[in-house]
Amino acid sequence: MDVNLQFWSAEGKSFFQRFLHWTDLLDPTVLLKSNEEIEKSRLLLQASAQTLQEPLRDKKVNEAWKLSLSSVNPGTGEIIPLVFRPPAFLPVVTPLFFASLLPHRGAKKAFICQFIFHAYTAGFTIANGNATAKAEETALPQKIPQKQLLVCTGAVSYAAFMGAVPHLFMSQNRLSGPLQVFFRKILPIPLLASLSAFTVMLVRGTEYENGIEVMDKNGKVIGVSQKAGNKAVRDTALSRAALFGTAVIIPDSLLYFMQRTNFLLRNPHVLTPLRLLMTFSTLGALLPVSFSVFPQLGEIKRDDLEKEILSSTEETELFYNRGL
Image (cartoon, rainbow, N blue to C red; front, side):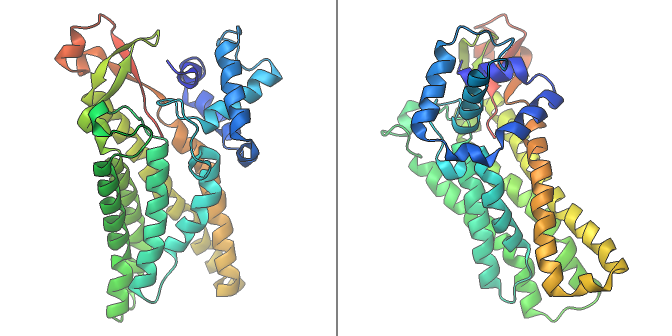
């Protein structure tokens, strides 16, 4: 079992534990560390005699954990590309997310903004997903299989098109009153949430098609399970949909009540930067919650697994890497 998963096994048993750790791990200053420093931190953790029951007492070990957990995919042990590491998610995705929600005069601009946003989240999903795959899927290790790349491109294109549909409809029809409110304010919220979940399901589709590794409590790999893969992807998709859906509802609701009490906030020169600030703050508050809702080291009952795995172990619960 990778040292990152060992950490979550000891330190991620409750939502509150996971939330506290993620608020620390999402520190953007971690991105300033070099790959060499990250590799040294991994070696320190692997060679350290310190037990995982007390992993955060030593300052040097604490820093090593922070680098490893925020920069390395536990499924492969490889360093995640800089822009797709968890600490980079908030500063990168906020302007893309905000731009995808702005009212656009033409559907073309809306499609481009939606495409860039979904392309980034798809890349983040792949980089932080469970990398278990059949060896014959690709001849080159550490490369995205051609099938997955095509599916990813199709998923992003479809999500961008569907996300631009309300803008397309409004540009072709002069709407006013309740219809304008529906297409501009209401429809984008469930649409964005569902498309975010849809993108996760498709770009990580190989995980429930091929299955992912399941382990016992000691980290021994028992087998490869499609059911565990389906659970890992489903949980991640739900957390992603809740993140972006809520990140739209909260700022819009607050701004609505603020506009009713303050005439100055109706000025677009004031409203736009305020909305951006509120969106950034909301995403920043919700991101550690989204990463913490489901354990990084997922659990699945033995009876819920395939028959071939049932015959391989007597353990009542098995574990897997959920990914982000």
